[in-house]
Image 1: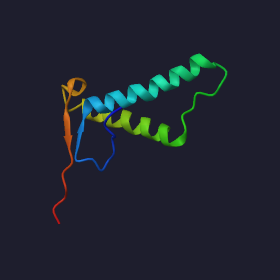
Image 2: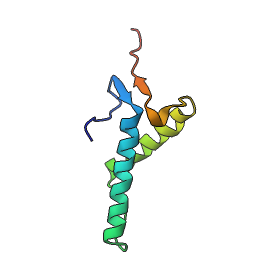
Image 3: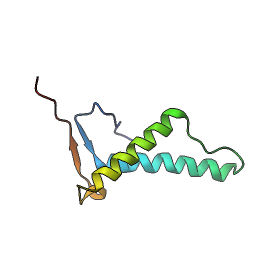
Image 4: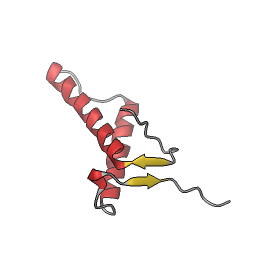
Length: 80
């Protein structure tokens, strides 16, 4: 993945979020295929990231009809 997604980014493209979710889920699938008896739990940081990205996606899809095709999230700084 070329773009890092953080809550400090000024601009985030929804396609980057979708791509990261797919990467994490593909990684889980590959673990299950390699060793079905092995636990398929993500490490804590990855699990938190996947949960946060899925929550963000579910929330944003309600308001952005073109989420899957590319919506831009822009960070707004609160006025001091």
